[in-house]
Image 1: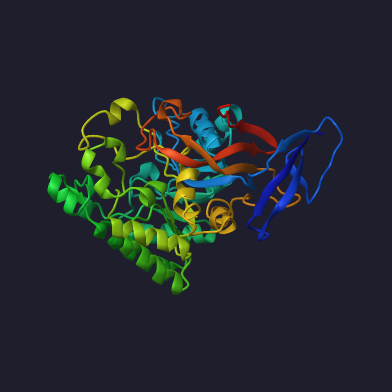
Image 2: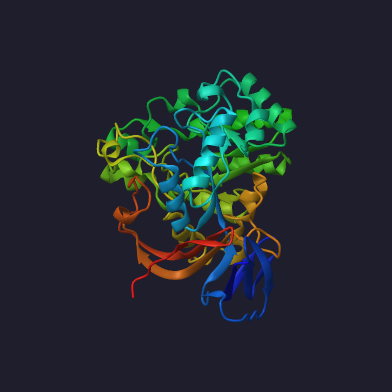
Length: 430
């Protein structure tokens, strides 16, 4: 029996509402004990977590691994390794691969490949429509039986509302959630960045806030009718936040997430035309960013996700007009979250950790997000005060498309434990 003892850490467990200095004993793949003082004989590996938080393993419910189909951008091996370096023990990749994850055999491919090469748990999200074509539904029961934990056509909105209604009804019967890429493609048109003063000044086609707002409004109407479960990916606008607030007040089963880049950057940061700041939905206005922060603090947005979206240097080494949307985010997400909510003294550690552990686990029915006795030993040890500079060339991700290269950060995952095994330890400067 393998044993691992974590001592002197600040144990933060949202499920039990615990925030205290406690030791954690792991036996094989489970939490064996959580107590004030655990002392064992020699031969047990001990991690001294003094001045660190000991939390449930971080969960990212929105990322892109590009596998199968785009090994030049990312593989399951490189993506999960980058995730582990960021403190994530469980990730939920989207289905927009090549081929699209729209059949049970493809879910099984991801899971088998991860068992062989991966570093963290993968809870695969499968497509709502075959080939993401928006015209024919996938077999949701087949996908669930193969291991899919939610459905999404992320990257493409579902604009056939009759089809969308049926998808929500079927998912409800399976007690599954559909994750929405809320966008009206006609309003978005050929937009590249947020439609506002900067897009007019630079002469770059804009993506209006109404493209998100209109799509969210019609999808909320469908939830009102079907009583299904809907999660809005990457909310970016103050109008979207208001719609989400009203839906939650109405008691509809609707949740939302925000990505770190939309909490840190705004459209004005694109004056340098950096293609690594181009994402969809785009960086929005200062007022939008303020609304997003308030929405998280007020519980309207319940999840922080990464939307890790790798692209090659060649793809991003073109003009902002031509470059693909998306940035990597596994390794920078945690310190950026901390910058916005913890170091600014806006949020207590326990409430902050909920956003990246127990809340995503609850929303998608992922069997993680807690570190009580008997739970699977997925643990992240975080030093919230550790200061470091992000060097994108040292990223474990195969792609390097980050706007945060050389940014000074505060907070880092020191150790990542999956199923009782240490899979990442930060190599710090002496």
